[in-house]
Image 1 (cartoon, helix red, strand yellow):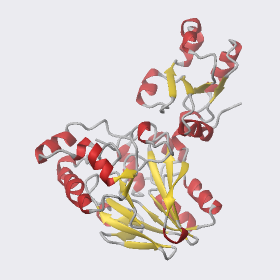
Image 2 (cartoon, rainbow, N blue to C red):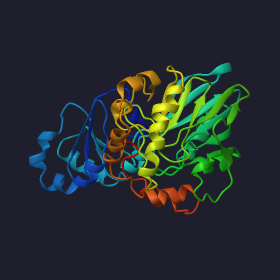
Image 3 (cartoon, rainbow, N blue to C red):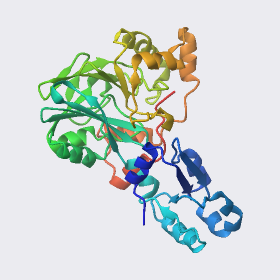
Image 4 (cartoon, one colour):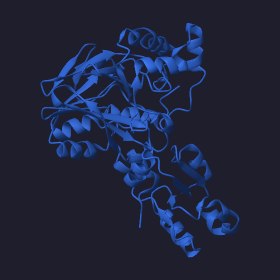
Length: 371
């Protein structure tokens, strides 16, 4: 019987011991794999598993399940049959493989809002993306939705709320946004930062510094201009309690300014946002980023969040006094750019409309939004 990615996600978030046997190529495994606080993950490509079993079998546990993962959940079924023929009856496969792992969204409650409202975070655990839903008095706003829009619609239906507003914090380059699609599907208003319009082919509600939307006539979503990752990057302050920072500020890192090829031009904006504009905000605002980099950033309650005060005390990228040193830190320590980032940007502008299989392929791999 297969293990679903939702079941696997919940095991990892509950800190259960999990053993993963990844049968993809060594290159694919090293680039992107399943991990977590209590996850043991090994890589044995399928051919090696079949041809060299006697020399690799010592790596497999005898007292816990073995979850086999491949790219799409097909080869892993054959691998499970092989392992069970060798007596490892506790082996099962991860349904849908790494493709399904990349697309799964797990909703986690962040907290309560004014007038009985609620705020939820959607963790795309296999990709590191974070989306949000603000709910109040029968209405909902979704911030930074990913392309799996059915998840947000189903969740809203379960909560008996109607999605009226959809926001993007910036023009995304590491994953395909579901913002415009979701807004069209439910008849909601789509809000987008005007300064990031590099050729959008569709209409949207313009977001400027100070733009405010009231959800359910009670919860404010306030736009706070915060350039640096992109020239239009905009944070959203929700209910005067939460700061949704997009890809500008993460729990343990900061955003990279180079995904539009403008690192030198935008690094000063990034510094001003992090070292001046955010410093004017209340210390007890809870930071909710659009990505996380490592599983250790997920708290014990399954959320990715911390206060501005704590992040500024712990994040060493926010403690660089010299402007030159900061520029060097940012521009000299950039990881490889996300897969297909230029094609993803064009898709998010509506200039390209790939088929679903191509969209999946474009997003393969980890997020790489941080310095």
